[in-house]
Length: 151
Image (cartoon, rainbow, N blue to C red):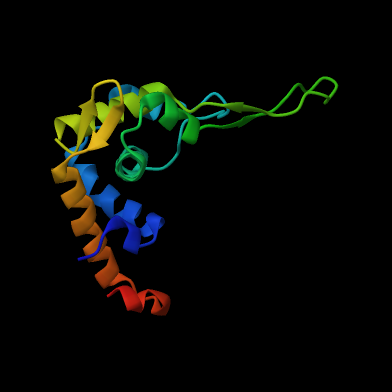
């Protein structure tokens, strides 16, 4: 049986996003919200909400229990320094905690993630099952010779 560690992360996230697109609803404000202080515009992807949810589900499964603060650090970026004299270096910024928190709440409603008191969020048995089943499907569909040893 394949696990999420047996397939490339981008292929797994893409397949999970297709499944989560039907389950999760993007809020009305989701299309206008930036994903961090360092961004100038909101995301332009059609399936951004489902893709971010799939990525969050994988991160919670990999690093859980993990909190919103740590996840916003991982989804952050760098914001440029001052333009006037070009002397200030770039500085690190966090990602949008509201986007992350809302997606995690939706994943909790779907019973894929649960709250561990004082520790953050962790994956449930249903979430682990979804990840492993999707990883098995992705592994079957992959036509990459270097991954044949996992099949």
